[in-house]
Length: 265
Image (cartoon, rainbow, N blue to C red; front, side):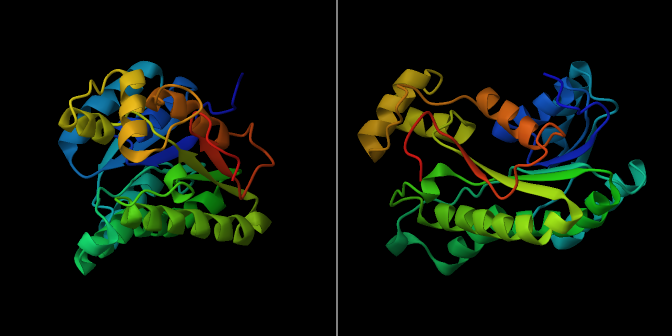
């Protein structure tokens, strides 16, 4: 199916690895122009080469710390310069790494979770909005998490940040509707990310085996999916690509579960 992404101008924040990279790859596969925002140049070089091989015209790697508003503004100023002041797609794929129970977390850890996991999205949308409004069509897709609806004690700060992403996105879908800028959220479940595979090693499980990984998640957290395995990053990318595309012409304000089957909340 042609998603209408040929030469679309897109930015993927946090697109150097994991689900963000998978989303960038899917956009590139359909011929979109892709700019990746990540913290360091070393994270960018490999993914930019990959996107070029996949067919993205002149992919761009931009170094910026998502907790620094000035760096984000500078990155989008460069996007504007390269692409004549227009942007069709913004994907926010950054997530916080803070873990711990409520009683274990200090104020600075809470602040870090919100700053990285939620305020990064706020900063990027704010910087991108003039470019999105200038384009003929525009989409915003941000990553929330299914754990906002199926809580775990050690994810209290993480889910707080992701809940903010969901809430702000819902508000944006309303406020940007007159501009016909569609705003949606994707909520992945247990996906074999680098972090989850790393955790698997600490409990003696092969993190590269999605069936073993789901069994360990079920044992330690009690959060099984209907399917007997975890998801893979490459199974998330196509969903993001559709939400970000012209083929998605009427879905806005939605929170899409991609979680192997849990519930319909």
